Image (cartoon, rainbow, N blue to C red; front, side, top):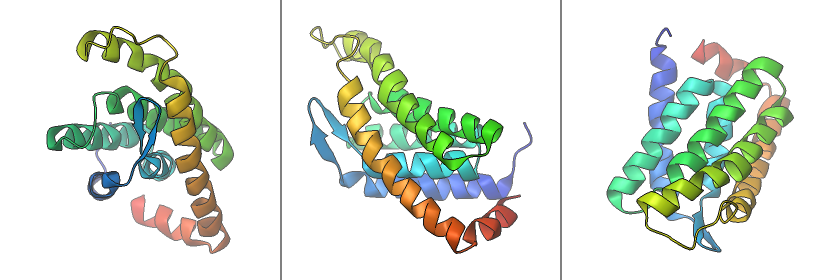
Length: 168
């Protein structure tokens, strides 16, 4: 994979935004829901591609965990959603499909991948396979809806072309 310095810089700035804005969360059930993280996942998947989106979401989760503002559940949840969003957009080139990739990737697949993390790494013996699906699904719906609204405005104002030109 050829490294694009501009995409790397944007991924770094998105990581900083994700960490700083992680103070805004909504408690849903047993998890903390970060709609800004899902908004950034969609933007990263669409503008940076799947691998940069995956790296950005990993770095954000790592820094949040090191600072004590996140949990280990952020790794499977956010990383899978960002990667799915980027892969779907790369192949289909449709924003609604990419947004759906974030919702399914984080809400369903990431939620189910949290089971082994909660059970074996966090010692939560009560965790079941679908324990985190509903809270993650609710969280990602909010953030993904915000991303869809922002992207609609960017497409309407023709700013998407400018952003793509900068990142290519």
